[in-house]
Image (cartoon, rainbow, N blue to C red; front, side):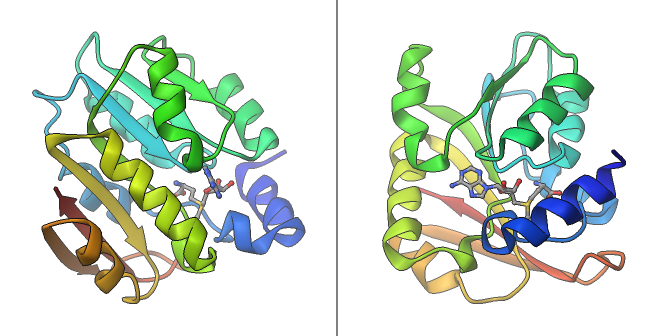
Length: 188
Ligand SMILES: C[S@@+](CC[C@H](N)C(=O)[O-])C[C@H]1O[C@@H](n2cnc3c(N)ncnc32)[C@H](O)[C@@H]1O
């Protein structure tokens, strides 16, 4: 099945969880990945990789020996990632972001250098948002960055209550049918 159809059919089945009818544009991908310090990052986490738009861009820029842990709840997207991204640096975990720290522990990893999220946070309940943000904060190194995007500007306050530094940037150049987005870069 073509990528766009796979995403659309899953969006129709579960719109709140999938959160978007189209993969992120190359503009957004570039804006997200330019915040990652690839030289210094040994452990990168991606939450909600979907069909792997950010995943491929992150792997392209990551050095040898980096590990990219991808947490995805949708089993069809996981199969797609497994079949389409053949790279030993990617570790695919079929589990939710809520299980971030316990899964990293299985790999003897306490902290990630960078956590990138494509999660549709604004569709989540307040307790679920809080749980995921707690997990992210606990799993991020002291100098690490949490980088995420949303289609609206409504997450700033909650992020500020978890992180001491939150930078925002508006990316208007997301090509239809994607939408203009807000990028947040958070530090502990
Ligand atoms: C808007 S899509 C983002 C896809 C991709 N990162 C992109 O930008 O093109 C959101 C993704 O988050 C996944 N997702 C939703 N809830 C999740 C959770 N609790 N943990 C991990 N992934 C989740 C969905 O299955 C979907 O693949």
